[in-house]
Image 1 (cartoon, rainbow, N blue to C red):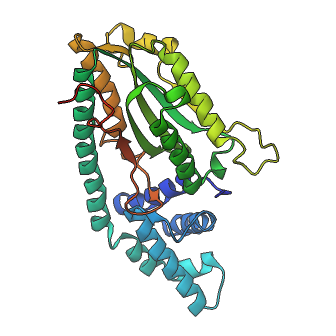
Image 2: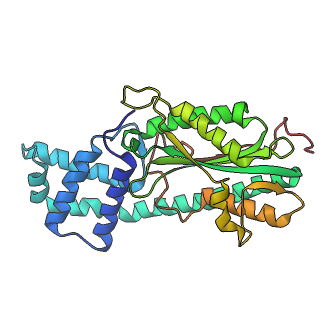
Image 3: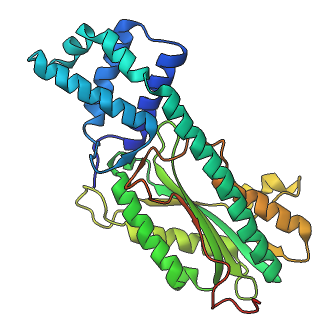
Length: 314
């Protein structure tokens, strides 16, 4: 479950290599060195059972080809083998690029569908309740241990968190709706979750306090999950959007999208929905997950509006 390299950073580096090869090209020497470095890093976090994004799958095929060439040439020197077969390796890296781009476009279309689904879900909730307290929390990991966090471990943490939300206990008591989106950070960022929580406004008024309670729960879920002998290390980190110092920048434009939202205030409802839709922005291609535990694993989800527990539904 632990990695010795930054898994999401390596996946982004693979994509960057292929994009650069297609659009700008590489000098032979530079390409060989980059391939050797990436392969040596990727083999440390590669999992055969994972489902990878299109460009990563293409790269795995090329990596397999290079391993075959190593066997045929009876050499374990990647630099030598790649240099001697660079023309074929270049061609293999880009041969399915158009198909991979098509799958990425399919992802963007799915995000558009997710956006409309989230918009409808939130509209129903804001129409149903006189007031809801909107809380946004970004859940992540301490920057010093991101390299150790595999996607499998992140998924396990998220499964525990979603169970806590479904049970509506502790800091999740009084929740009337929720949404979450899993992403990987651009560049050297790690795996993280954008979490949206909507609480019954009659029972809760302090969004920042609730956000800090959610942060504490995330720290509890992730505590001790490192190679360190200190099993009390708090590796879970969070950023609570319901922070007055952070929200001051939106006050002038009256575009604050968290906090108490009243049904009879259309502007606050509009701002809340607009802010929430950040979770599904299709243009965030640098942050979509390049790896999943299975092809069917969800990276976005919401609660259900029509449930037998929700009062007043016809």
